[in-house]
Length: 373
Image 1 (cartoon, rainbow, N blue to C red):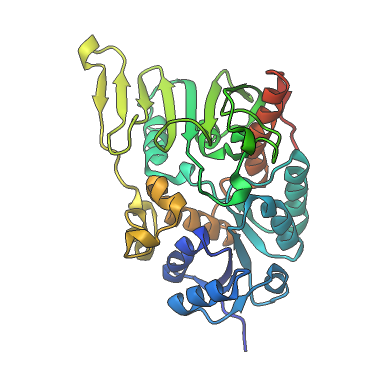
Image 2: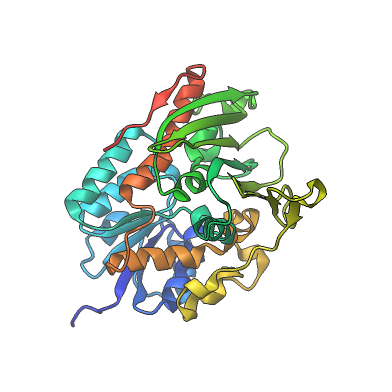
């Protein structure tokens, strides 16, 4: 039988990963060729629900399947690097949920493997495809912000009750949600980073990663730019509603993310009378950028019942409608219609800002230069 002309995708990990299945199934020119999960029971439940016949419990079986063109990895953080490397070496295109890896060495290895394979690698960073980021990017490209003067991101989340590998994770090891918009809007990479840790998490959580800090806050210099960025992260023992935020300060206008879920963000306009400077603004949806069959997924999850949504989806406010944009961007890159964003080098840079920020915090705020590959 001749191989399908569609891009045949395998989903690896069916917790958060299942959120993407109907998006791929609705996408013109793509199909879900297989699903993979260690638990046979949960694998079959998912396969039966979405009518997917090819099911694997071992990642190696997916890589050995010649009918699979691309893998979308949604496994635990510690598996991201090894699975991405194995998939690239097996000749598969790779999409991987964040972060790219947990070490600078693994980031380098993935970049080199992508170059050797010639396949597309894309880290599936949600924030740079959220409607809020797309709104700010549109304002900037239209010249409404003027010259960007400073960028700030924060990602604060209470991870109590999440799977055990999260317990005690250094906050900056999962920093791409707040790092990425600060770099993507200028289309540049970070050059060096300085970070300080603050506070202390529960003593029981510290030994797993040797990281004591409740909050890590970093500043980084953007290469070939006079702009700096600042990011703050917390995961445990810090009282804060979930927040992935992005602020952009410009010479004409500035954008500040809402403080509380359900509010609207604020635009500050320079030159107006003082009381008129701030104004709350609605953020439009950007579904019109997508193929019509997947536009509906920007404003709702893939499940009908709220209690079926993955915790990262509900806590994150639906990730700003980003999921169909991510699918479209990756598949478009595989078809050669546009470069992957972020590509392997950019994914590495966004990830290493956080990895080296944590090293800086552990070294008392020592400046860390971010390598280029």
